Amino acid sequence: MSQYPTTTAPAPPAPLPGGGPAPVSPPTPRSLAPDLARGMLLLLIALANVWGYLWSDAGSDAAGGRPVGGSPLDHLVDGVTTLLVDSHVKPMFAILYGFGLATMAGRLAARGAHPRTTRGVLGRRGVALIVLGLVHATLLYGGDILAPYGAAGLLALLFLHRSRVALAWWFCVAYGVSMSAGAVALLAPSDPGGASGATEPTTTTYVTSAVERLTATATVTSLYTLTLMFVPHLVVGILLARAGWLTRPAEHRRRLGQVAAVAAAVSLVGSAPYALAVAQVWHPDHTGLAVAELVHHVSGDVMGLGYVCLFGWLAAVWSGLPRRGPVAAVTAVGERSLTCYLLQSVMFAPLLSDWGLGLGEHLSTTQAAVLAVAVWLVTVAVAVALQRAGRRGPFEVALRRIAYGQAHDHR
Image (cartoon, rainbow, N blue to C red):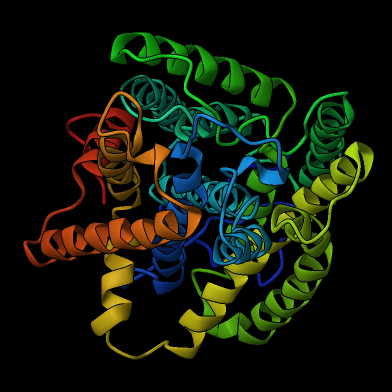
């Protein structure tokens, strides 16, 4: 099995990943594409997460678990969000996470680090994400994604330095296992769309709800790890890093555009039936809804890659131009994506949860979508202020120090 070389001079990555991985050269200056993608991803995350805070006394048995009694505008917003956001965000996040792992490994290899050192750095990072995710879930948001990604990152240590053939094997096996588990869960005799939707809270005290959030997140993290849920996406991110599509997007502009266009077409066609069901235009039976949701998840996996390539293509279009205006603001969020992700929960949870102000009982999904955009804009303002002050995000700093050690706070 080939590994990253441990020479101090980085070898240029091949345009397409070959039999053995080449180190990923550190971008100088900082590459626009990953930060642009992460910054826009945070907007999609806000739109995807906010409706999970909504609840009502009547609950909901509709597809997607949205609150009952929505207006036609709410149904439209639900359908569009399902079509463009739901089930697209987690794959995109996981692909970018895999890209980040491979980039870190490549930089360490270029500095002459031993593979054991690299595994130690990435292992500490994964454990730190698990702990941070469980704390995040306990204090604020039961739908945390940091803990599952941290666990998936530990699995990635088994194949991060492997050949393309080995990565293809990991992708096929992991995707088969995860999709089989998803199909079983969706086709089981239960409501496939409303299991995690808007329902009446079962707790009224913060402490009790915190215990429930911790238990649920720990369970989900374990199940996702056992079913290899995010492993295929990590593999895709690793291959993107080796191919240099995001670090040198101008060289791959045409291919990025092609992949984004094809992925968008596949996603729109595949997600449309489930989006129509969530919008309450189509009312299938249980089996029909389960199949539509399963196809929607597969389409979301495809569009996760499509979104990454779309923002890579935009970065290629804007290559050579100074970062200013909206582009600079979005990339400032991308550079501080962990801090901005947690900041969203700091705003959402107290406003919407039953243990806080309880606005989640009264907001429509249209109002919630507007709130999500507003919350994202607040994180943009915070990120821009930190950028102008020359400061990184506090959680990025903390995670980097845990991974590398106090004495090696690499940028």
